[in-house]
Image (cartoon, rainbow, N blue to C red):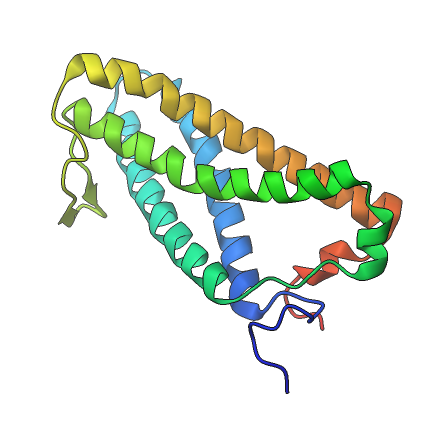
Length: 188
């Protein structure tokens, strides 16, 4: 039996697959909630959604940290040699660059949101129970400077997710190389 961290296996393990899909759905959902809530007039509904958005962002940050730790301890499977040989060098570079940037933004987006919330003087009380420490001192000018960066990084993350999905579509339906099956649950 091969060890879990052996890079020669063809598929991701169950934990990596679970992290991938749970975070994918959470990030996509939270992006659309963020778009929706910013367009609402000031109301109890808007305040509720902002708190929920912050809680979900902290949950995504924690899950991202766990995912990264898992990823560092469990090497992902290598691309099959036939697939790798068919990919031009720029696609191989893009494959690694997009994954690196996705991981970076998994942390940057919620940390910028936390920093903005702290600087704006809006503490985060996770699930309404656990008060989190302020990430920054209260400073309205700093909050104004940070706020757009949270938005820009969220849109950058959304763009990378779209690029990632387009690459999967290309591999699945144009190249027909079975890349998607490496990340689908229950197939093996």
